[in-house]
Image (cartoon, rainbow, N blue to C red):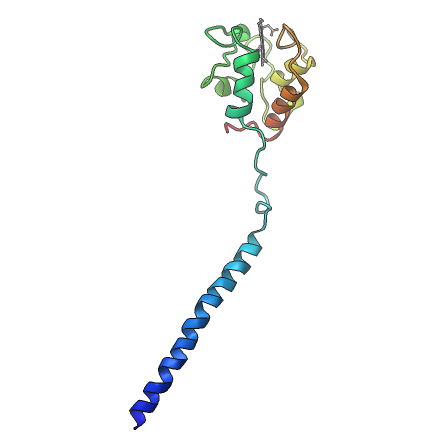
Length: 150
Ligand code: HEC
C-alpha cells in the first residue's frame, strides 16, 4: 500500500514545518527590533524636548500679556496663540532689523537677547521683571532645537 505510506509521512513533515514557522517569525521579529535601537537613524535630527505650543505659548500668555497679547502689539510683536510662531521665526524686528528668532542660534535671536538683557536695542523683556531662569532656558533650548512649530 504505497499510497497509505506516503499519506502517513507527509502530514508529519507538514506539521513539523508548521510548528517551526511561528518560532522563525518570532526570532526574525526579535532580531528586527534589536536592530532598530533607541537612536534615530544617522543624519536625522534628535527629537525636540521643548514644545512651542505646550511650553512657550503659556509663557507668552502669562508673562507678555497685555503688551504683546489681547490686542496689544508693542514693538510690532503679536504673541497671541496662532500668531506668535509666524511673528517670531525668521522675522526681523520692524524697528531694529534684528531677526527675532534665528532657528538653531539662541544668541543671535532678538527674542532670547531681550529675555537675557543682551539685546543691543530697546529694553529687556518683560519690562516689569526678569523671566525666571527656567523659562529663559525653555526659550533657549527651543531655539537651539531648531525653533520648530511643535
Ligand atoms: C509692560 C509691557 C511689556 C511686557 C509685559 C512685555 N513687553 Fe516686549 N515689548 C514692549 C515694548 C514697549 C516693546 C518695544 C520697545 C522695545 O523693543 O524695547 C517691546 C518689544 C519686544 C520685542 C522686540 C520686538 C521687535 O521686533 O522689535 C520682543 C522680542 C519682546 N518685546 C518680547 C517680549 C516677551 C517675550 C515678553 C514676555 C516674556 C514681553 N516682551 C513682555 C513691552 C512689553
